[in-house]
Image (cartoon, rainbow, N blue to C red; front, side, top):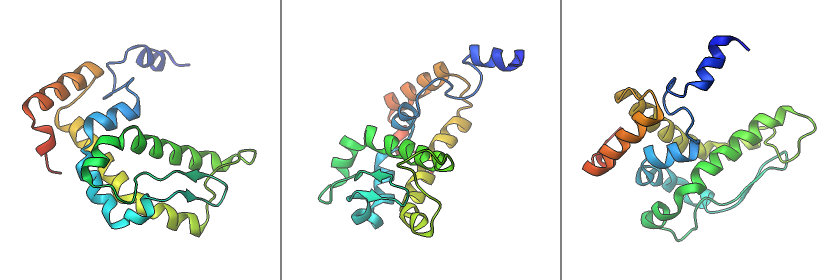
Length: 159
């Protein structure tokens, strides 16, 4: 291991939000009401379990009768966990010995398509907040989130 890389690993101030789990980042930086808007066109899709070619099964993200308040109350850890599971199933599809993966098929592409909008929105919100506030560490992130929540500006930020 190169000395510079080892130093970056030991010093968490390098890179925005270094050391925080993705679920924590999503929970603190992504507006669930905005994600809900992206889920609405595919409400039937997100309210049913999805089985992919390759054996991976993704549980329903929402219930069919949910409204925005229900989603806001239950979106975490469900939303970040679903993203992590999809990512892992895609990455491990290259390993022939793995089961429960998402194989590279046209049908799976179609099954993943509804995730594009909510995933893009979540990534955009995290990226914009990190860049706008030039967050360089967990401490900076936590301080900025505290200020935003205290002043209630975070929920009103439009992307």
